[in-house]
Image (cartoon, rainbow, N blue to C red; front, top):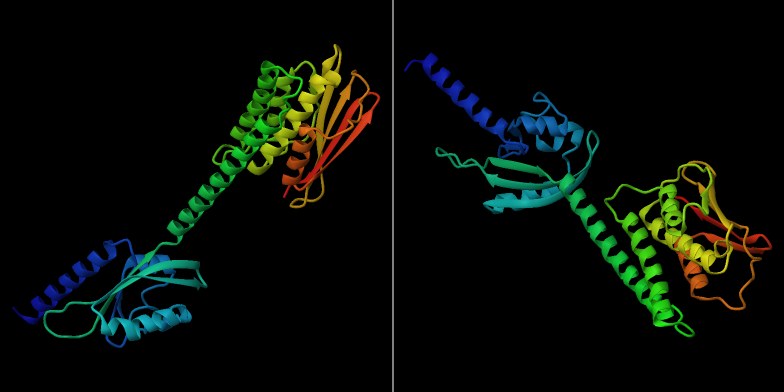
Length: 327
């Protein structure tokens, strides 16, 4: 074998070795004993936005204008790696100027070489930023579901305990309780995370359908997309107002009507919703001598919304104004 054949063989083996490195998805670095980069994988160049000329032959701490000059990494390579055969999945977080915050699992092994005992290092970098973000979002969703379930069970318990019993038959109690429970379930379905975010029009239409669409007029109003946490309290407020209208208000007599509408005010990011409920054609609204469960439920719901509610007992019927922040 002459010198040209030997060169060709070495060249072929080098290309094959580099090809195998470039095939691996995770970024790879090979460092010599002085922690200079001998070679890097294609994925390293692509992920960390650097090129070969500014990488190979340079100390790892000088790569990318010092973006790898990370104290944790220095300690790992200078103290841990020389004393161990391998370090696996060492978590490292760093804010890179070119690509932003990254969470990485770094593994470092001494590179085996059959002819000598050089302490070359193979560095494998796994970018787990997206995986951690997804896991964090899952944890938030699970926490939200648990929180909502506890709140839902507490509301159901309150409905059962505080729905009035005195002077009612078992059938009347059942109808009242199941009516409130049905409204709770219906609005809760709209608020479940993962569903398309409902708008206020959809919620109002549900209530109007329950009460009778011919007696509830939904006025032309702007589109308002609700956050999941807003759906349940607003739904319960509208249901209680509707139930009261059927029992005592405009919907308790023929020809009575309810008008529901809303408006938005304020700049984007700091908007407020103003929703009105106006009863017409019914008996004169009378302020109750004491607050019943329905009133307490409305007050609790408006607190959840960080808003306020105003009730006016007019001769034309009950007038209600609900205002709340939309951020």
